[in-house]
Length: 446
Image (cartoon, rainbow, N blue to C red; front, side, top):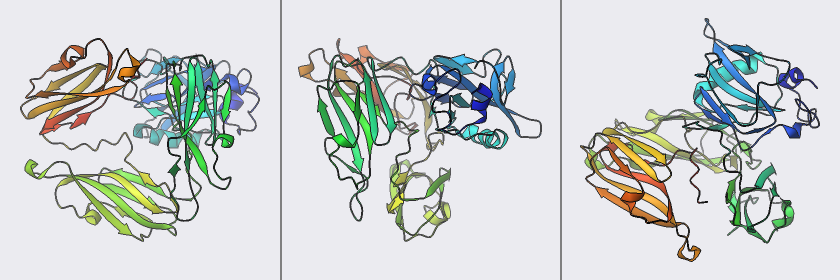
């Protein structure tokens, strides 16, 4: 099967044994590609890959194709793919055409850009390019400085075959125990999902190992999925969460939840089994003395869908607010939803302060400190003697700080032990209220 056929889109069964230059298994993404906005992509690939871009046309539409040469795109190129291995690509790089990076093609999988800036171009792509590929969404990142594959788990690879089956392969040297966390969904009035307390553990495992229903000890009639894996022992990466691209929702009536903006949400779909909706609002009053933010829950019993809930329905007055989450009650999917990551719903109050994580142990704050009363820094410590605890939580407080301020090992007085900063809380009439390290920072203890 040639590359043009693969890029035009063939069913998953048709490509099971063949890919761009050999078997499909020889071409895959390790982890997930990271899209920073629409102008940069970083990914770790075994084998070859094509990058999908879109250029805006004079009539407001989009021309869609794969990068094939300096400033050139082709919807169904032939020949060798342009990229291979671990790489980053940016629209600012020489030879890359102006436009948007909207996807990544690896064998029979077309990863798509999850960011809002790419959605209009992806609609054009679906209209222009014939495709029956799987279309998982990649990750949305704040910084794409290098391929996200520096940490390989100490030679151990964890692969979700499906929602109920996980394979652990590689070198088991130093691996003492595997703990996995299944979630179960009981019929009738039982909890859904329901976690198995403490998870399930496999001591002194021999790799390769496939974890499936044989290890779960749950009734065959109870739906479940594996939410995460923990590795205990001398391994570099000790936790693996279920990939975001794997939809493991229990088979119930699907309801679509769309955040129109920070103050408005629309729900559509079947409402027969939907008993109640709860919306969690955070409000900011003009008088800081009344509190900002202030929480409130709005409930809708036995709602009829489609339903749009915004300022008129939520009756929060003139104060600034945002919807933090939506919970659904009944035999429906999803159980809850939160605003997408690319929707900035922070309050515009006080003075803006820029919080920059230089690395896992160092954070710099700049901006106007007039209304900044204090800074709380939350960090974890790992002592050389495991008996002393690893990690160990600690907090440092800086009252009436003067900006700019860099807080690192010297300021936190931690000695020689390893540390990582988990979060920063700002006290006073300032924005933001808190900050955490970017998602692309790997701050695990070695």
